Length: 101
Image 1: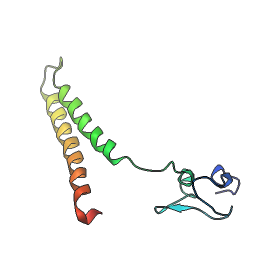
Image 2 (image 1 turned 90 degrees about the vertical axis):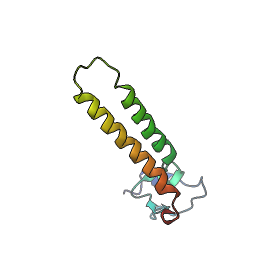
Image 3 (image 1 turned 45 degrees about the vertical axis):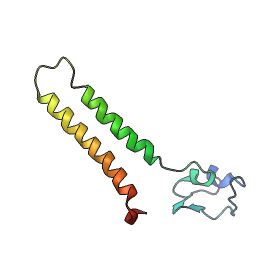
């Protein structure tokens, strides 16, 4: 990454002190890979992702009421809803077990 990039020009703020030729590493993520890690705009939203999985599953089940005649669509909607529900529930279970922490 060039030394005149926006990530390198940002000095101070957020308690990050470094020279222009060094990369900042926060939680294993380097500012060379993702420049936004320097000023704190780097994170994940696991609770929102799990909630979104349940919302998508509910929307897919609501889509069962419609004007389609065949049952092919219903099978796909139910299978996909079960898949999203299972993935979201699995993420909750994995986050609560001690071996994942």
